Length: 155
Image 1 (cartoon, rainbow, N blue to C red):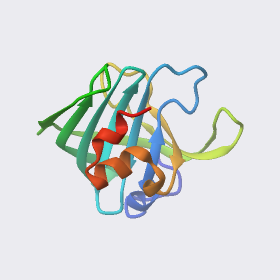
Image 2: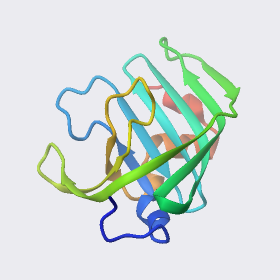
Image 3: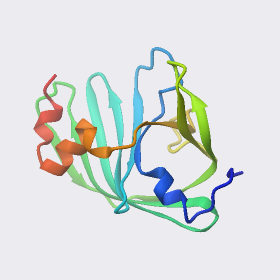
Protein backbone atom coordinates (compact mmCIF):
# COMPACT_ATOMS: atom_id res chain seq x y z
CA UNK A 1 0.00 0.00 0.00
CA UNK A 2 1.40 3.39 -0.99
CA UNK A 3 1.88 5.88 1.79
CA UNK A 4 0.43 9.36 1.29
CA UNK A 5 1.37 9.64 -2.37
CA UNK A 6 -0.67 9.32 -5.48
CA UNK A 7 0.46 8.36 -8.95
CA UNK A 8 0.68 12.04 -10.00
CA UNK A 9 3.59 12.65 -7.59
CA UNK A 10 5.24 9.27 -8.10
CA UNK A 11 7.19 10.30 -11.25
CA UNK A 12 8.79 13.18 -9.35
CA UNK A 13 9.55 10.99 -6.34
CA UNK A 14 11.30 8.34 -8.46
CA UNK A 15 13.83 10.68 -10.14
CA UNK A 16 17.33 9.69 -9.04
CA UNK A 17 19.59 6.68 -8.60
CA UNK A 18 18.30 3.75 -6.55
CA UNK A 19 20.30 0.81 -5.21
CA UNK A 20 19.21 -2.65 -4.09
CA UNK A 21 22.24 -3.15 -1.84
CA UNK A 22 22.08 -0.10 0.45
CA UNK A 23 20.54 -2.30 3.14
CA UNK A 24 23.06 -5.18 3.00
CA UNK A 25 26.59 -5.63 4.31
CA UNK A 26 29.21 -7.04 1.94
CA UNK A 27 26.98 -6.93 -1.10
CA UNK A 28 28.76 -8.74 -3.92
CA UNK A 29 26.51 -7.34 -6.59
CA UNK A 30 24.13 -4.46 -6.98
CA UNK A 31 21.19 -3.54 -9.15
CA UNK A 32 20.97 0.18 -9.77
CA UNK A 33 17.80 1.74 -11.13
CA UNK A 34 17.68 5.28 -12.43
CA UNK A 35 14.74 7.37 -13.44
CA UNK A 36 15.05 10.82 -15.00
CA UNK A 37 12.47 13.56 -15.41
CA UNK A 38 12.16 12.82 -19.15
CA UNK A 39 10.93 9.26 -18.47
CA UNK A 40 14.23 7.68 -19.46
CA UNK A 41 16.44 5.60 -17.24
CA UNK A 42 18.55 2.51 -16.95
CA UNK A 43 19.01 -0.51 -14.79
CA UNK A 44 22.56 -1.67 -14.22
CA UNK A 45 23.46 -5.06 -12.85
CA UNK A 46 26.94 -4.54 -11.39
CA UNK A 47 29.37 -7.28 -10.43
CA UNK A 48 33.13 -7.08 -9.91
CA UNK A 49 33.94 -8.56 -13.31
CA UNK A 50 31.24 -7.06 -15.50
CA UNK A 51 28.46 -4.54 -15.82
CA UNK A 52 25.19 -5.15 -17.66
CA UNK A 53 23.38 -1.88 -18.36
CA UNK A 54 19.98 -1.58 -20.05
CA UNK A 55 18.56 1.77 -21.10
CA UNK A 56 14.78 2.04 -20.89
CA UNK A 57 11.80 4.32 -21.21
CA UNK A 58 9.43 4.39 -18.23
CA UNK A 59 5.99 5.70 -17.42
CA UNK A 60 3.83 5.62 -14.32
CA UNK A 61 0.47 4.10 -15.04
CA UNK A 62 -2.65 3.73 -12.89
CA UNK A 63 -2.48 2.01 -9.51
CA UNK A 64 1.25 2.80 -9.05
CA UNK A 65 2.35 0.49 -11.83
CA UNK A 66 5.48 1.43 -13.76
CA UNK A 67 5.79 0.39 -17.38
CA UNK A 68 9.41 -0.20 -18.47
CA UNK A 69 10.32 -0.60 -22.14
CA UNK A 70 13.92 -1.58 -22.88
CA UNK A 71 15.82 0.23 -25.61
CA UNK A 72 19.49 -0.69 -25.63
CA UNK A 73 21.74 -2.97 -23.61
CA UNK A 74 25.47 -2.64 -22.96
CA UNK A 75 27.68 -5.28 -21.38
CA UNK A 76 31.21 -4.47 -20.26
CA UNK A 77 32.99 -7.82 -20.27
CA UNK A 78 34.90 -9.54 -17.48
CA UNK A 79 38.24 -8.34 -18.85
CA UNK A 80 36.76 -4.84 -18.81
CA UNK A 81 38.19 -4.16 -22.24
CA UNK A 82 35.23 -4.36 -24.60
CA UNK A 83 31.62 -3.35 -24.83
CA UNK A 84 28.84 -5.41 -26.35
CA UNK A 85 25.86 -3.39 -27.55
CA UNK A 86 22.42 -4.83 -28.30
CA UNK A 87 19.00 -3.42 -29.14
CA UNK A 88 16.40 -4.75 -26.70
CA UNK A 89 12.64 -4.74 -26.92
CA UNK A 90 11.82 -6.36 -23.60
CA UNK A 91 9.05 -4.61 -21.74
CA UNK A 92 7.48 -5.31 -18.39
CA UNK A 93 5.45 -3.71 -15.64
CA UNK A 94 6.25 -3.44 -11.95
CA UNK A 95 3.96 -2.54 -9.08
CA UNK A 96 5.24 -0.27 -6.35
CA UNK A 97 3.63 -1.39 -3.11
CA UNK A 98 5.29 1.08 -0.73
CA UNK A 99 7.31 4.29 -0.73
CA UNK A 100 8.66 6.17 2.22
CA UNK A 101 11.87 6.36 4.18
CA UNK A 102 14.23 3.82 5.67
CA UNK A 103 17.65 3.58 7.25
CA UNK A 104 20.71 2.63 5.20
CA UNK A 105 23.83 0.87 6.53
CA UNK A 106 25.36 4.12 7.78
CA UNK A 107 22.22 4.90 9.80
CA UNK A 108 21.15 7.71 7.46
CA UNK A 109 17.49 8.18 6.63
CA UNK A 110 16.94 7.68 2.90
CA UNK A 111 14.03 7.52 0.48
CA UNK A 112 12.95 3.98 -0.37
CA UNK A 113 10.49 2.15 -2.53
CA UNK A 114 9.39 -1.47 -2.41
CA UNK A 115 8.07 -3.49 -5.30
CA UNK A 116 5.27 -6.04 -5.13
CA UNK A 117 7.86 -8.64 -6.21
CA UNK A 118 11.54 -8.55 -7.24
CA UNK A 119 12.30 -6.79 -10.50
CA UNK A 120 13.75 -9.98 -12.01
CA UNK A 121 13.08 -13.59 -11.10
CA UNK A 122 16.77 -14.19 -10.27
CA UNK A 123 16.75 -11.39 -7.67
CA UNK A 124 15.77 -11.68 -4.05
CA UNK A 125 15.55 -7.97 -3.29
CA UNK A 126 12.37 -6.02 -3.87
CA UNK A 127 13.49 -2.90 -1.95
CA UNK A 128 15.53 0.03 -3.27
CA UNK A 129 17.04 3.04 -1.53
CA UNK A 130 17.89 6.31 -3.23
CA UNK A 131 21.64 6.87 -3.25
CA UNK A 132 21.65 9.98 -5.46
CA UNK A 133 18.94 12.48 -6.31
CA UNK A 134 21.03 14.22 -8.97
CA UNK A 135 21.62 11.84 -11.88
CA UNK A 136 24.45 13.99 -13.24
CA UNK A 137 26.74 12.90 -10.40
CA UNK A 138 26.37 9.21 -11.33
CA UNK A 139 29.30 7.89 -13.40
CA UNK A 140 27.17 5.49 -15.48
CA UNK A 141 24.63 8.21 -16.31
CA UNK A 142 27.45 10.59 -17.32
CA UNK A 143 29.12 7.92 -19.49
CA UNK A 144 25.85 7.16 -21.29
CA UNK A 145 24.98 10.83 -21.85
CA UNK A 146 28.49 11.61 -23.14
CA UNK A 147 28.60 8.50 -25.32
CA UNK A 148 31.77 7.44 -23.50
CA UNK A 149 31.02 3.94 -22.24
CA UNK A 150 34.74 3.12 -22.42
CA UNK A 151 35.11 5.25 -19.27
CA UNK A 152 33.15 2.54 -17.43
CA UNK A 153 35.96 0.10 -18.12
CA UNK A 154 38.69 2.10 -16.42
CA UNK A 155 39.25 1.45 -12.74
